[in-house]
Amino acid sequence: MKYYQELTLIPDAEISLNFLWSKVYPQIHLALVETKTPENHSKMGVTFPKYQNTPERKTLGNKLRIFSPDTNNLQNLNLTKWLHTLDDYVHLTSIKEVPDNIKTHASFYRIQKRKTNAQKAYNTAQRLGIPYEKALAHLQGRDEKQPQAPFIHMKSLSSKHSYRLMIGKKITNLNDPQSKEFNTYGLSSKASLPLF
Image 1 (cartoon, rainbow, N blue to C red):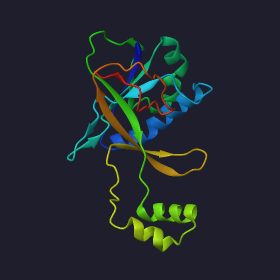
Image 2: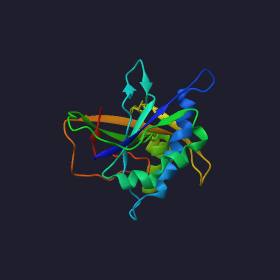
Image 3: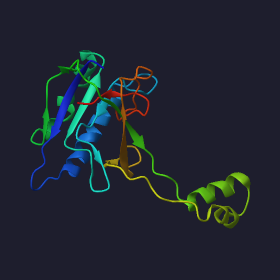
């Protein structure tokens, strides 16, 4: 990825960073949906340079960089149009070239919420045609711990359901050329992007 644009979210005393993410990221998602490939992928990916996921602090930070192999994709994305109602709270840079001396790369990916044992038992009972209680008894004692990571509150435009878009991060040592396809959130567990 050779080019990027950077967004900086600017919270204040009345508007929190989490609230801003819940307004900004759906717009980015919609912009990526508008520019997706016929295979429902995006050619552009995102990083969160100030991401933290420690027991003490879980945050995406206040910055997002969106990367593209060329300037045309970023121009067509037209983030200014999508974020115009949030001008007071979002600073958007012009399109810039990625510096040459980047040593660290990372993948930012979506973390799916795990099913509870009760949900797994129901599905198993349906699939195997056994009583729910028997399927549940088989799962007793299994860990139901949910993943913990920074997230953004989102709302589906089609179903109107609210959900958490949980985001994980994996550091890599090099720019992984095997995949440059991202989902329409700009996330990928296979593609890595410059981290600076």
